[in-house]
Length: 375
Image 1 (tube, rainbow, N blue to C red):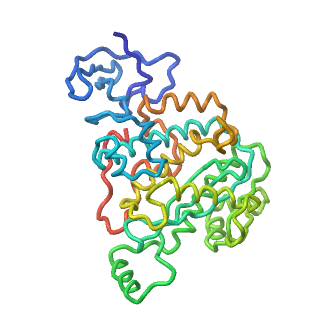
Image 2: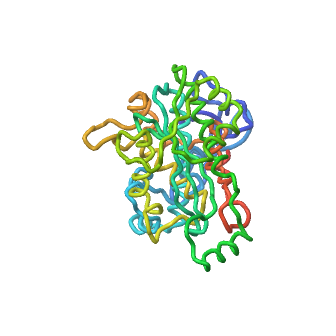
Image 3: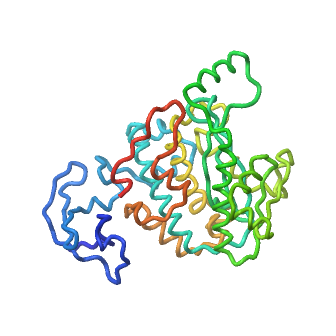
């Protein structure tokens, strides 16, 4: 049987990064190894670098002991199923479900990175913070979302842990003070998070053919500070190329509201992701895993879900200007070939999600990151 691979998986090899005019073929058979899950797995040796690899090296189930249907996992997650609910349905533990969601999230990040090369955005943008919590309601978060005004396509997201606010009893204030001795949110985290979102908006401006771009937000005081903290964004704002417009967050959430795109996405997240449902017993316990689930949902929202129930076959990505052939090609390969970090272009927020480098409140040390995830 003849085997074909797109490149050498070892990042130090010349055939790993170079774009080859023909399929990579500088390898020879190097035996087999037995597995219970996949039977006899053939191995190969690269003639350039001498490192060995197998057919499983390019599989999403690399190092896994069981195969799971990833499209089914995605549909269950986006249908407001909890991790334990998904585990019961597919006869797997919640740890196994979380592991596969992590793998699928990295695939989603890589797929959206590749598809972004094909886009030529021509719409204005809306941005706002989606508030939920992780670990405890004493550690709320602000998830910034950058959404297309016309297509409701999600162009970017970012995470910030914020300090609990609002009315609290005396006992709650005392407990917050006790918890803050162990973990305290950064005081300017929302402004820093919005600055990263503005950076993604500037990238969209550079990709479009428009001379200027309107960015709609509410009147949160951290947003102007976020723009001012970015020298490039501030300069483009002064030149009139980046126009920051605001509207009251108390305005009616109708389709005429410039913030309708993010208001609509807020509603979808509340009803489709179980951990964000109001007053739910299901909530996130780990910041990195919470963002992995969000990235996987964004893939579903952008490319799989129909823009409106009556618009059959028209996704948010199609309305954002993505070609149908590019979407079909990417969705056809996303669950077949394992994406590698060394061959994926990511922004700062996406890289934090991929590398699981965000700090979870009250958790000591960094989250475990498998070596194969950063290959």
